[in-house]
Length: 103
Image 1: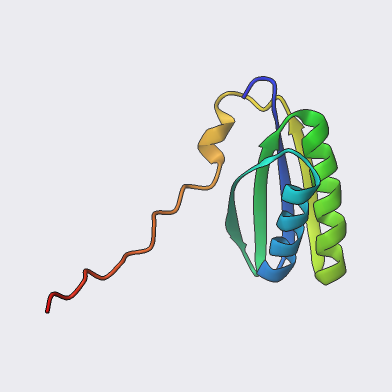
Image 2 (image 1 turned 180 degrees about the vertical axis):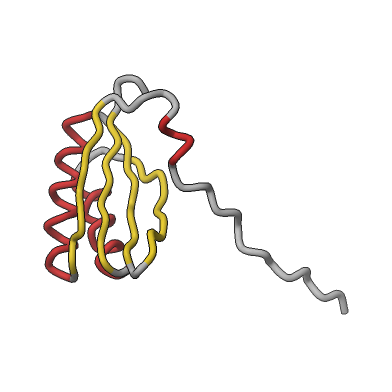
């Protein structure tokens, strides 16, 4: 991820975060890495892309989320260190599907 940037959007409440993340993904060429619960109702969304795209996406996301709820923090890290992905949210597995019942 040497030439990319990491963008973070932290909100109070999942609805505001979803609105902000939707705006981030629609406004610039960024890819969502995931989201994580921080506690006390705060949730954070992580996106990556080139520096300009991430900056534009985070700005758009913060504006959209702010119309719905409370934006706690936004931040862009240009050229994150190679070991930083170890702190990204863990990939969540697919939901368990009950096996089909044979008749």
